[in-house]
Structure formats: structure tokens, C-alpha cells
Image (cartoon, rainbow, N blue to C red; front, side):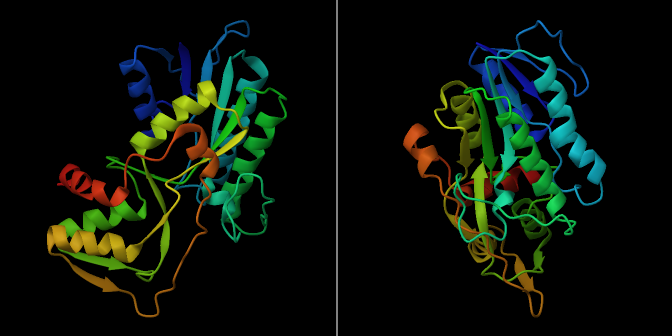
Amino acid sequence: MIFTVLGSSGFIGGALTSRLRQHGHIVRTPARNEFPSTDDNLGHVIYCIGLTADFRRLPFETVNAHVSVLASYLKRCEFESFLYLSSTRVYVGSALAREDQSLSVNPGDASDIYNLSKLMGEALVFAQHNRTSRIARLSNVVGIDLNSENFLIDVCRQALSGKISIRTSLASMKDYIHVNDVVNYLVKISTDGQSGTYNVAFGKNITHGQIVERLQILTRCSVEVASSAPTVQYPVIDVEKLRNDFGPCEHNILDSIPEILSALS
């Protein structure tokens, strides 16, 4: 098969490109502003371009990555299928996290520019009225990503220094999914997805306490939690559709902590 991975220089895009090539697929990896000929079929397109940690500081770049560049590809290119990577962050503030629920955003909240731009990207994809255009809402993707600023990688780095300091309570929790599971799911959704939107997540929240406990066992580190640390909890992400169509995740992120520590050492 022919695949085109947009955003192949990133963590997810790079892992996806490697996996596809390992399985013998032809993979095109154009640069962000490199647009193929309008009569050139890109095959199965997976759109991995995006910003995460820098979105508050770079609002224009965030909208450009999530919406403007996407619009250019959708307008100019032919493809067999198109898979846009969105985020389960769009469920923040909701009691539930199902693909078919209504969502709430606040344009006056600087944090919501990320959600608004992702949802606009989703809307553009669905505006094509193409049954092979799909959305994958990813939870917190982790793996051997030495440049990551997510909580898990951060506390692993701290543990190796001998002390973990965190600003949210040990009861805080969210969903983590291993990049290898993400890559497996994205390929299957791209070629065989029967639904327009899939939550790509582990489907069970993991607490800071569970992560810290595992790190203490492995590194003998000490732990300091800020006084009056708030508890931040995200809704459990519904993955029934994903599991029914493609099976459960193969990795529990707690079991991947030794691998991450080894890579960071």
C-alpha cells in the first residue's frame, strides 16, 4: 500500500513511518509546506502535524498546524483515505469522553485554543463528506521520546536525579497509551476503520500515585508533593468502539517505565 505521513519528523509520525516501512509499505513523507501535484494520489494519508506543549505561547502556529496546513492538503490532494490526529483533550471539562457526545469550549480561555483548533480540523475533515475521512482522538502518548514534556517523562527524569517534586496531588489521574499501540491502531483505522471518529486511548486512568510508587521501587527516589496540591482528574475515555473493531491495547504504561528510565539514563 501507499501511505503519506504528514508530520513524519515528529514523535508519532516518525514511529508510524518506521512501522509502515518495516511492513513493506511505500511511505511518502513530504515536508510541511511541500504539496504534491493535484493529480497525484497520496494513498492513505495520516495527518500527524501538530503542536502540544507550546500551544499557549504559539497560538498562530497552533492554528496553522491544526487547521491551515490541513485545509491546503484537503483542497489540493487526492487520497484513498485521510486520517486526522486529534486529541482526547477536547473532552476536558466533560463528565464523559465518548466520540458522539457534544463538546464545550470557551474561546476566552487561552488553554482552549488547542481544543478549538483541533475541533476545527475535525470539522474540515468531515466537511469533505468522504466515508474514508476519519478522526483519531489520541490520549497522552508515551514511549521513548526524550524531548517530551509530558508528566510521565518528566517524573522519570526527576526520579533518576534522586527526587521527584510534583505540583498536583498523587490522586490526580489521566489516560496514557504507549506509542506502539497508537501506531498499530492508526494503521488499522486508516485502512479498515468503519467509524468516523475513534478514541485512541488505554481506556483506564492511571494516578500520579501509581506512577510515583513504581518509580520509587525502581530508583529509590524521594517524593515531594506541593502543599495544597490540587487534584486534577480527567474523564475515563470510552474505548469501546476501538476495542470492538481492533482489539485491546497490548501495553500498560506502568510496565514500560523501566524501558523509559533506561533510555533516559
